[in-house]
Length: 259
Length: 173
View 1 (cartoon, rainbow over the protein chains, first blue to last red):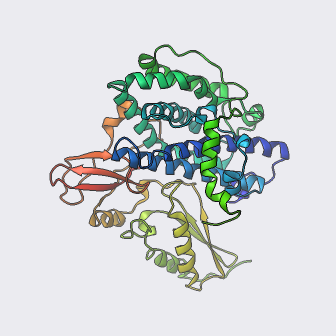
View 2: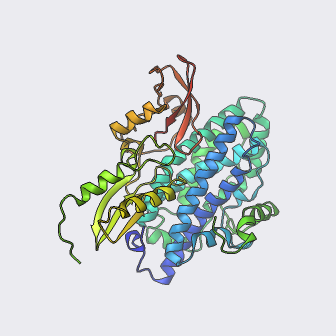
View 3: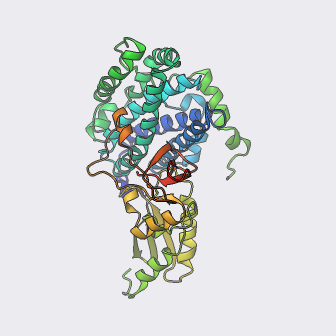
């Protein structure tokens, strides 16, 4: 893909910064959840899940790579540098992805909250005015269907079994931070006006809440109506600092190394 | 720069591409897999559009390398450019009939056709509507999905109740 084919060659700096903010937020979400998922490789509760979480992790990191490449093309940067060359404070994933993987029920709860939010967002991005992003979002959505299936199946399994209480507790613990997938972006108005993001975050947030509440409330009890916060993509935790140390270990061992 | 029409040049490129195996399932060529979105000649360069089966497919770089090397050796142009794109998206419906047969012969169930209409969100109730895969060994449809995730991103794991064999399916996507 070239800059010309994406229709972003002649952007003024403000428009470019707005688009960069959007791309980075989605890319960092996919990147960080991909690394948390990969923490289950080798130790998932059963062999099928070892394969499934590893495969999902590979998908998410692949999505992040494609998004970082779009961003790198826009800002004349390098995708690997963006992925692995930033300090903890410079990542822009939603607060939902700040938590360590926890137990299996916690991971399933987080994955369900994230997958449903991501599905709403991808549907909007599939009609973005950015041709490259729209095509990528459309393609990602086809793959995410399998992730959604997987998350749905596990929610149903946990809700009907011994894991119900642990799953319910995880949903309650993660509910506030889950809103932050839809945290307002600084350039939010402009992104909507230029149709890079065809619907405002507030609308996407409302659509997501309407979708997950009827599924989750019978299991987890009443879930508070909360608005995403402006710092929803800027809060960082010790859990994430630890993960950052893990995923930058190889790239940090020798600057510029290829592998 | 305008290039003189050289009849047969495009056919030679396609014929060469048809000899390049998919790195993960070598029984099928990149053409039969449907990942070649088009071939054009521009300014003494061959441009090949490559449509990844999955966004995160680690075989993309291998395919890019193989295509560049094999087409370069044909000596039809100064250079070969492989453009990776998601527009149009690769879908499992792009696998040719010949490719589906080759998959079956190597023990993979070919993907069921995509349902008509746009790709939408999927819910719990759709679980039961996952397509049945036909066992590539005995042809039985008495099969169950063991895991929608398999040894590579594009493969799912099934079990055949008739011949009691596990087998893989190239995912419908």
